[in-house]
Amino acid sequence: MSGAAGTPGAGGAPAAPDTGGGPGTPGAGGAAGIPGAGWRRADGAPAQGRERRRRGGRRGGARDGDPVVEEAAFTSYYGRPVIKPPVWKQPDVPLYLFLGGAAGTSAAIGALADATGRPALARAGHSVAAAGALTSVGYLIHDLGRPERFLNMLRVLKVTSPLSVGSYVLAPFSALTTATALAGQLGWFPRLRRVSGAVAGVLGGPMTTYTAVLLANTAVPSWHTPYRELPYVFAGSAMAAGGGLTAALTPVGEAGPARRIAVAGAAIELGTMHRVEQGHGLVSEPYRIGRAGVLLRAARACTAAGVGLTLLGGRSRAAAVVGGSLLAAGSALTRFGVFDAGLTSAKDPKYTVAPQRERARTRDAAGEVTTPLS
Image 1 (spheres, rainbow, N blue to C red):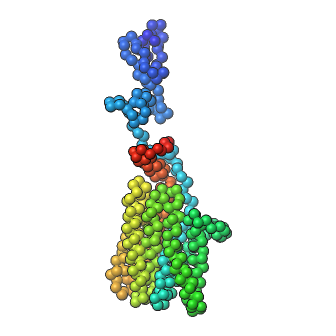
Image 2 (image 1 turned 30 degrees about the vertical axis):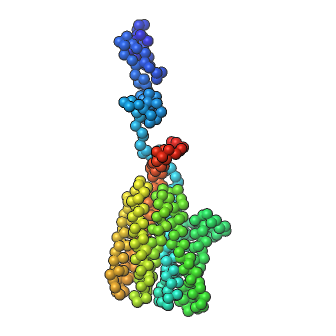
Image 3 (image 1 turned 180 degrees about the horizontal axis):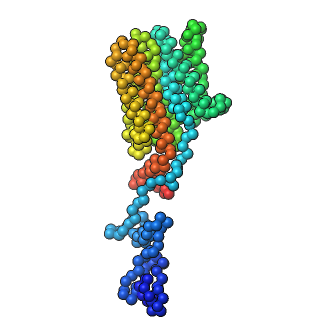
């Protein structure tokens, strides 16, 4: 070309734009062509950034004063989730989580009451445990769709699977608590009832926490990331609910152990739930926004009010009933909030991709070898 790009040359024909991406050819006026001029990316933006990367060397290695390409910020994955959201139903699964935990604590309280000679507290504990366990199983079966699917989970025990272990805890626990409660109400087989109640009390501990391990074992970001705190949240929530309900159904004179367990559980739940909501960066956000945020704020209010009534109500039966009901309501709202936050994080790809990139940058800064993320 004898003229500058886009001007007539010696033969009168217009010169073609420089598309080679290399240095431009000087024209009659001595001006150099602009590399990449006229090229556009798929989104319509100019493509000179390719030349900038070439001049700056490898990414992040530009010399002082050289232009560099700004790192792209992640906004979406074509508007689609990166992971498949759980297909568990509402309200079936949150109620299953709540009722199973409350039943586990109530069974332990019933066994403790049997051992310390508190018959009214024992009856209340075993009754709440049986009702909670059977209702929990009912919600689980409804979520599964057919009863035989629950039975299929009992065919093989896999100690590495929280779902399998939980099924083997839930099935005998439900049977033992039901038998213990019926025997206590009818006055049958007192010795056998105490044995079955004691075994159910031992199984009550795993009942309060295995569902938290089940959630944390998934790929859902807001469940998996706080895997250390979630079992404590569920255990404390179960203690608050089971203790509160049992205390509400027991004469005030015998309900002391249930009240203390409920207050201790509420403190554990509030403390560890605060860590879940605030301590994990972006992944904690779903616990503070939207429907989950509303549910968890209501849960805190109910739990705090229930603790206040339980501690300050003295020997008032009305305060015990209202306080225990508020503690149970706070526990249920916590389960719904945790469940909803997990679904939110699974549906929005930023909660999956952004933390992965942050972990990769941290490893790169520490000098570890990583596989590049697309």
